[in-house]
Length: 495
Ligand code: ADP
Image 1: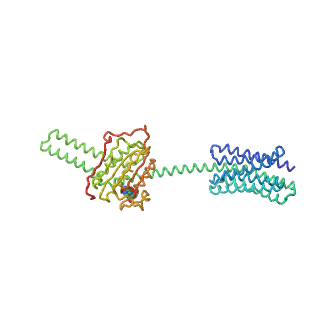
Image 2: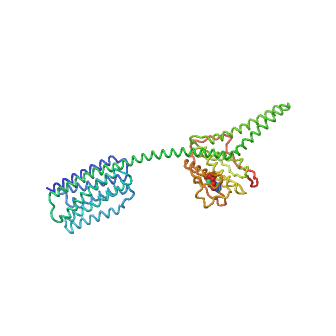
Image 3: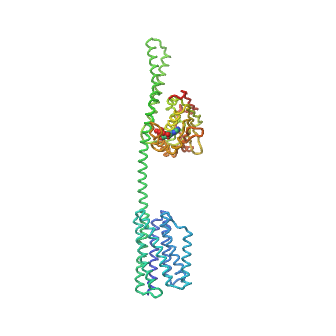
């Protein structure tokens, strides 16, 4: 009677353990995770073990005893491994195999060597109990770390099953070799089956819960991360815009000078025309020449103001092919009066063709201007003032290097250069390089600044080259690339 009850109980448990992981697999298969595979395989193996025990009498004894127990053990190990893997602490496979063999050897020794059936039962229950407590331990860890209700359900249901196992173990030890009372056996089996069914159902639902909670959390985090990125991009753009305004502010004197020159030229032409016309001495060809000068200088002024306007234009970055040679040349032109004033010699070898990268022309110009201005400020500290600029291609990367003859970076502070607010200048803000680095990162590029072997500092800007065949930027005819060597007058080192 009690034997028949046990068989039915094991078959029932086996079926429940078969159905639940199959459902879990159907629900979570899309996750293609090893954790899910191990968990479902664990429950299926456990089901297999239960069914083999349940078929006792219809199949050879060694299958329904040794094999069934080994399969059940493997199932429990697989479930524990799933939880451990989830927490990044999986067991090594070889240790699991060794544990299985040790279990089998002990089982066989007790069964055949000692011929002690009660001890064998106690051994099986003890091993089960230990492994169930492992499931509880790892599920509890997940529940604590991730505030997961699903993991808490696994821990709780398996703790209940472990408690039922403990009751059974204590009873088995108490009766020893003596026979178990049928009623007591029935009650214990009922307890074990109820706890087992609960562990199978609640455990698997809990496992699905962990996966769903996690995917909901990941989605939330992804949305939060996107919002943070958009916010930091917005702030970054604002910062970059302010930095550009500041750059132009710093160059106010230079720009005034640059605007003053054509204005003076216009004034001179206009005065000459007025004087000539008043004295009736002006040939038509001469007045045309003077008017042409006025027009050319007005165009020059308009070009300068347009450059300033577009450089500080606020608004969204606009990605398009950008010619590094062209923007470097434009920034050098912007700095030209300062370079001349400080007697800085600039060498910029001719490029045979545009060096194209993808990005926002204004932002990339800003980076070039920041690096050039730093180099210009560095060389002002020494009598021999020169900058050497090179734009090259290396594989799929465009390199813009600016080598100066300044004092270089203080080795003790070199690792701080580029951090926000780090500056060694009296009127510095320490934002130029960090903004430049951020801009280059947004363009999948980078910026390095190091001391050059022969003295001075060398800044190297790297950007992915635009793939051949991409849309070419429009290069106006007046910017067709000619060798550019800016040779500023030397003022003998004065400021
Ligand atoms: P700021 O120019 O306002 O100081 P940056 O972020 O542009 O801010 O530069 C930070 C610091 O990096 C500078 O104060 C300077 O100490 C150092 N630095 C940058 N470029 C050079 C260079 N070419 N030579 C020497 N030091 C440099």
